[in-house]
Length: 298
Picture 1 (cartoon, rainbow, N blue to C red):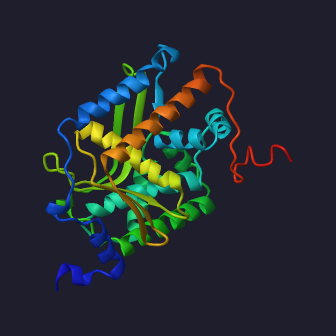
Picture 2: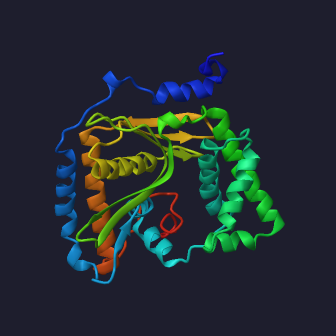
């Protein structure tokens, strides 16, 4: 039986959506990497003098989303102490279990992957390991169930990730500017493929559940920008995959998309610097869903 014949329609859709012939893949200028680095360096260096010498401003997709959505929420979240919980841990452990599935040599069973991922996370010496060690039975069962649902859904809707596709999960990516005072960083849920010369070949995928938000696309544009700065060639496509619907929201990467991401980084960093280091009062947002701002005048 042909490998594709053993796949269900959802799995075949993943292959069709992400695949592309070499002749259909875009190529980029040899100068793209240096141009992006120079442009972003110029735009971010103007903030360097406002950042204390002993501090580094780390900027992730999460920080950009916060500051662009609601400045007051950004400040509130920054001042609150992060605590592990079932909702905050399930995504990380799900990704670890999916990562294990790529190289799992036995029969792939979701709950076996979940338990192995939990065991590995609990054996560390960090805050997550301490939290897992102290979990009550009910919370541990809920966490196993939530992660098992995500991992099982992934295995049902995605074809097995072949080694020749060069899969990388939770791969860190970063770029430094303003003499190291500003660091842009993130972790890519899944990347597949690689560039050939200046021809783009990589696909970056973020896994989500729930509704589509425009910030999901902005997240991936941010990753595409960092990838272009790192390698000199951006991914040819970025995609958010909604596990609970088995649906993609994808975008082909062009120089215009990268330019848009660059401008957003500059805008976001400026807002963050203004609030954290220049004493600017954070603005209210207009979203009716914002817990801090929606009922301010009521």
